[in-house]
Length: 255
Ligand code: NDP
Image 1 (tube, helix red, strand yellow):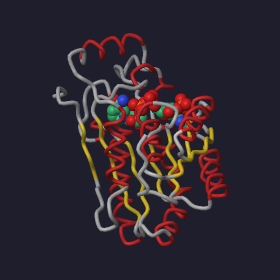
Image 2 (tube, helix red, strand yellow):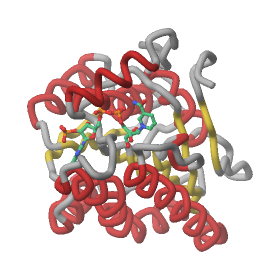
Image 3 (spheres, protein in one colour):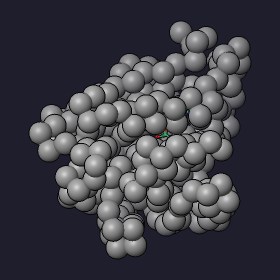
């Protein structure tokens, strides 16, 4: 892996680091020189990624947490800052998508989406904010970053996706509000809105929903998680003067 030093001596916390977009982003930020804090529930997965990053001369720390628990979310931020001394970037990639018709949908699916996509993101962002504000003044970059992985479902509502749409519209809205609130404190807030990316996301849905979606997108060449990691890297390695508020990325074939 070619090593850049652009993020040297920064610390980036990436949620959803055990899989898909979060995992690819963690690898990429480590390759840009950041020390990366890997957060997800599956400890074995993030341990393996931390080892892989270390073998490539990068730095990573694995901290397992269920981010739907506010104390656990605050706990990983506290542990990261205690261990590494600072926090310069937060990438919120943890999330679930559980689509289906509204009448047949199990209520726990709706609760799970709200709990992680919205509440989990809020809990960890709140815990990170004071450290990000500090980091923006104490690093030569003179800036800190929060990148939230929303979705094209955060800009366009579609049938059978009401709650997922609601969570992602919420992420997009919160990001824009925070962007304005923190603009003069050198903390940039960005939202990345991907279309279809080849990850484990689809696989958590009911079998019938999964089959319908697989058939619908059968002829679409899906994005790779690295495509999204590249967008995140562009955002966080931007010079202080340039704040990228929003990036929408779809597969070329996705209408
Ligand atoms: P994956 O299913 O591959 O990854 C989801 C990640 O979220 C996993 O690392 C999982 O880790 C973590 N996660 C889920 N619940 C929790 C929890 N309660 N606490 C902590 N971590 C949790 O999907 P993607 O990489 O595709 O998804 C990443 C983000 O991108 C999501 O927010 C998704 O909505 C968004 N997105 C994805 C698109 C796609 O087509 N794939 C398109 C647009 C947006 P673990 O299970 O180990 O806890």
